[in-house]
Length: 250
Image (cartoon, rainbow, N blue to C red):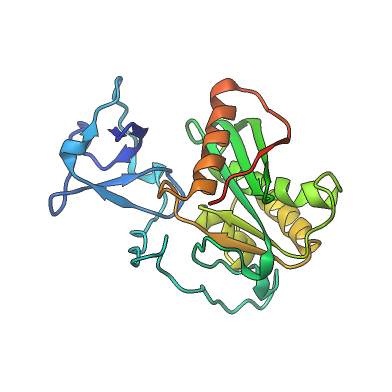
């Protein structure tokens, strides 16, 4: 279906008829990002041709946390006992506009047309007066591969020296709860095992790096830009390479 111009997945029956509960229909912007939204049926428009997908096309999901007045997301730090893997400094936290301790902020996102299908990633890094952007086409892959690879590209930029002086601290903000889970919360990766290990290894080499969750499609400027860059890569089937452009504040 289409919701306010954005293509979404909507809960329906085998005939493609919407299945509202309590007057609203469950919708997903991405099949496996862990978040389920609710929409009024009249706000949904059918996409032609209509494609009915099995329930297992989407992974388990929870409703996003409600926003508190004056904030972009209302949630406290997620705490977890982690006997192995990356240290607690990588734990996911709710979105905050201002970075902690003057950290460099990087927004990383992935996109996939089908799952698997043509995949791409987008990154926007706030460097103050300028911002650094990447739109990269990955070929055939899954949404999770794209999300993980976006985080890896941020780490590689600074580990390879291409991003200039290594920042004292980096906040990598992502709307992928899957990525945060397998990289920092001890979730066992059933797929993409080698990629997950590679990303973990790269993140451990960065000083003061943290992964933070931001809500997708919620008006967070940096996340929206990263999403647009990822989708542009998929649509054009090409990569831009790193670009430095005039900065904007989130």
